[in-house]
Image 1 (spheres, rainbow, N blue to C red):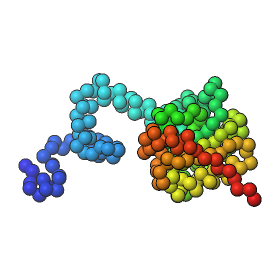
Image 2 (tube, helix red, strand yellow):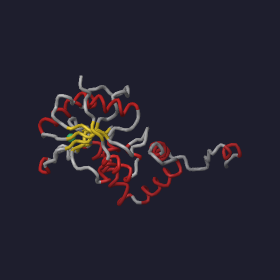
Image 3 (cartoon, rainbow, N blue to C red):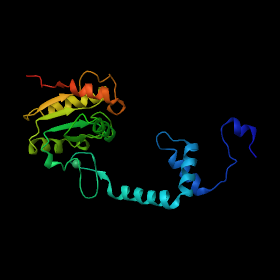
Image 4 (cartoon, protein in one colour):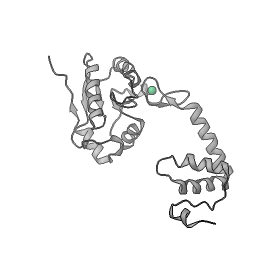
Length: 216
Ligand SMILES: [Zn+2]
């Protein structure tokens, strides 16, 4: 029986109480865009399709957990055997695009606006969880030198932290013979790269501006 109080508070407890399923509902509800109701629908789909969804999913999740990690050179995701962002030597790439996170990398990749390497900072210089080491800037400098990189495009977000990070990276690269630019007009103030549509992203790349170091 569902009491009036429970209904008013949205607590429909007239469901089977199965521990394993309650656990799963809790976990799946933490995923973006999913609440307890969608979680239950997903779980039902999994349980009623053990062989063609549930079991392959268990294996895929386990493989992901075992094999996928952050590359300690470029900061992107790598598989157990190689990093396909670092390992593109056959293409003769001469640009590096610096982004804050993997979601930004994926947005730029899917917009087809950029061909080159990515460097994923994993945050900004100000975020307390990110030390300068964790942004892998030493590895970035090595890459610029070794691959004879001609342009570094800084695609950090148009937030205070993102822009501070852009200038910090520019200063870090000042002794290298490399063009440094950042995304230009079209990038809305406070704009996170991940949330931009393709048109805005194209315009921001096309109108990128040079970040020259002030002569002193
Ligand atoms: Zn890598």
